[in-house]
Length: 258
Image (cartoon, rainbow, N blue to C red; front, side, top):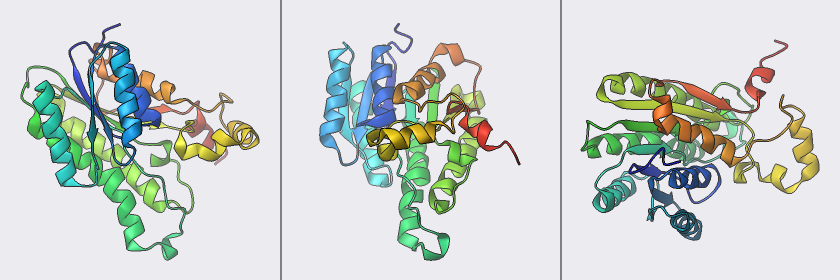
């Protein structure tokens, strides 16, 4: 449909899962896509090749969002090749440790926060420093989780990082609202990616978990990608500072019966 024609997008963690689905969807809409990976180079190259097979441009870049030097290098390279970056999707993240706070060491807590919170901060800062066409609209999208509001015992590191991202995105939207840059957040629920590997591999476990979702099904990476396309497109031109829950109604259901 070419809703993102001639736009340049950088999507962190787009070698698999939600990031890959967003990268493919953006490519299908005409964007030039910077696909990034931290450890799965083969997955990153596969995503870029699949975008190219659709008829769009894509490059594959190594990017460890927790490393400022790596962030700068990736942004330098995509800017060198395409001349600009219009859309930044902060998708890369790690799961929680499933360790109680009393037993959690500092390195475990740091690992989660460095990727899930510092990573988007590093990327947003570099995106803003590299912005060379202030007359064209800028887009920043965060991928958080319903656990920004719905907490689970044993995952204080993950829950804290996602709650912080929600408010970081809202604060940034206020900073940038008059600078032609829109900032929004997507909070997925149970999505069939590697983070829900158990549910992907075991149908019984998946069915049991789906009973807690009002729509009675797990989400797909494409469900999230569809919202990410909307938030990057002119159709959401008056939308900023918001969070879209993509969870089949799970967040609402978990709040009932209080």
